[in-house]
Image 1 (spheres, one colour):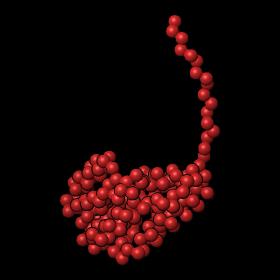
Image 2 (tube, rainbow, N blue to C red; image 1 turned 135 degrees about the vertical axis):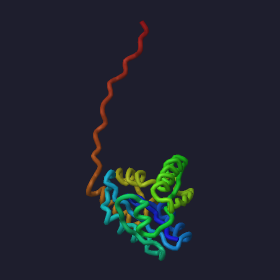
Image 3 (spheres, rainbow, N blue to C red; image 1 turned 90 degrees about the vertical axis):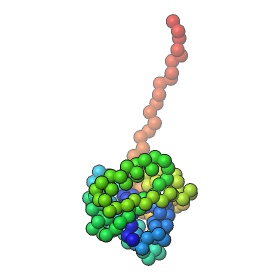
Length: 178
């Protein structure tokens, strides 16, 4: 059975990689499908994200990395995949992911969604958190594969955050009942 693991992966995290490695043991093939989403503004190009993921999954013989546009169900049908693989970190993920799974089922009745609970050590981790830490000079070495950490450090070296100086607040006036 072929599984599609779709996402933006901007950037891929160790939590994503954990889901990919576990999916590799469960399915004959896992296609990590990097979505070209026009409503998002990723820091890394589609080609860069595909290259990052390819490099950190090269040890997994049943994993393929590709990019796609459009509906995930259309891509899954095109690739003869019967499963969408999704990771769950917290309860709020479940609500969103369940809604997406039901929606995908209305688009193609032959697709199933398999949820894998994220390993405890990655339950807090998201691409947004990683970018926020890297943006302000924090270490992300323990959150993303080595090649991705280097790319993030380089990106924020070239594109430093625009930090506004703090605004001064006026001294509060005492409240006097009158």
